[in-house]
Image (cartoon, rainbow, N blue to C red; front, top):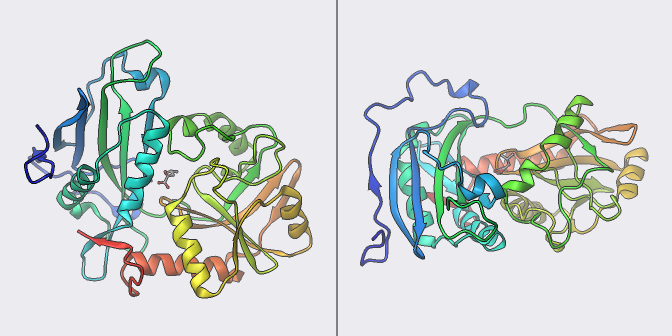
Length: 359
Ligand code: COI
C-alpha cells in the first residue's frame, strides 16, 4: 500500500549513483530537452494509487497496446520552481496546478490525484533535484506532471489503469524575442463542449500541422479564433492572450470553456487590477482588434503562461495583412507585468498573496 496510517503517501526512493548535472550549462539549455536526475511514478490499479516511487530519470518500458498511444487519453500540467536571492527553492501556486490537473482528469475520464499524493510527489522530487534549479533571473526548473491511461488494451473504452509521473527540465526564457502570431481563419483548436479548457494532450498534438504551416509563413505561433465564426480570440496554444486597447487591458473570458484557465493568466489579472489597470475578461473580436491596430489604439499585446511567463507579441498576422505592435520598450503594461512576475517569483518583492510555496 502506498498510503501510510498518517494519511501521507510512502514514496520509495532510488537515487542516482552519480548526478548528470556536471557539464550542464544553464544559460544555453534548450527548452524541454535536458532532464533532471530523477522522475516520479505512481500507478493506479484496482481503484488505488500505488507503487509511488522516485527513480533515476530514464525511458519507460511500454506495451505497444498502451491506451494513451492509441486514443490520447492523457493530460499534463506545467509548473516551475525558482530560487530566491538566498538560494531557497520555491514553487509558484502549486495547488492551482493540482486543482487544474484534476479538472483535466475529470474531463478525460482519468482518476483524480489526491492533494497529498500530488504535493508529496512534487515536493520530494523537486527537493531531491533542487540543484537543477538554475539560479539566474530568467532561469527556473520546469516541472511537468502528467497522467495517462496505461491499460494494454486496443478497444475503445475508458481505461482502468493509469500512470502519474513528474519529470523536470532546467529552462531559460521560452521566447527570446517578441512573438509573431497568426490568426488562422481555417483551423480550429477548441469549441464549446470540447477539451479546450483542459490540458489534454490531444489539444497540443492536433495543432502541430497548422503550426508547421504558420511557421513556413514566418510566424511563431497561432492566435486561435473561435470555431463558429472565426471571429473571437481564444488563446495562443502556448499562452493566454492579452491586448491593450484604449488603455484597457482585455483578455478572452474562460466562461465558454474553450481556453485554458491559465494560472499565470489569473495571477496577471490580479496584479494588473491591483496596480490600477482596468482589466476586462470578455470577447475580443477580430474587427475590434484590427480596427484598434489600424487606428493606433492597440498599444500592447502579450501572452502569459507558465513556460512563457509574460511574452510580448511583436506581430499579428491575419489573412494577407501583418500588424506590427509598438517596440517592446514602449509598452508600459507588459514591461511592468513581466518585471513584477519575475520579481515576485524570484523573491525580490514581498509575496503579499502567499503565492510562493517554500520547499
Ligand atoms: C506551459 O506553459 O506549461 C505549457 O504547458 C505550454 C507549453 C508550451 C510548454
